[in-house]
Amino acid sequence: MRTLPDKISELALASGTVNVDEAGYITNPDLWTRDFAEHIALGEEIVLTPDHWEIIDFVRDSYAEHRVAVDVRHVLKLAQNGLGMSKPEAKLRMLALFPYGYVKQAVKMAGMKQPRAWSTG
Image (cartoon, rainbow, N blue to C red; front, top):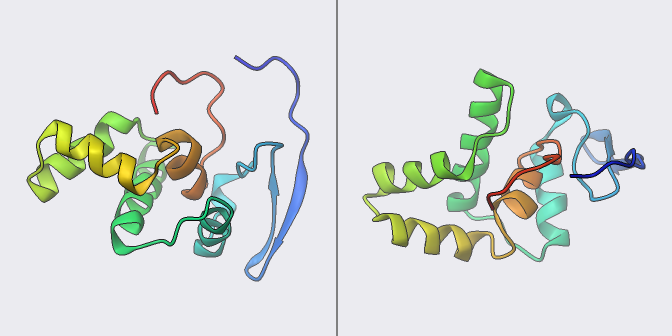
């Protein structure tokens, strides 16, 4: 768990300016835009596909409903139920889409704040 305060900086995008913490996570999820997701993906060397957007949109929709970032197990259930994948297949697919992890890439692209202490992803 981090104990020091975050260093906040401004990130200027075509869609407007947002504040990000020192790890690049947005500080106000309500200011997220698709432009932000594309900027983060570019930095992660990921070309966003419809499969990426399905997960990002699911995370955003869950945040809109519950006001917290959804845990990876719920995203894996989406793949299992929506795409008919087994749990191992869903995990492999998630790793193929976000090779450095759900929290490091998917949660960040979806405009969630950086989790303070999260054991998954």
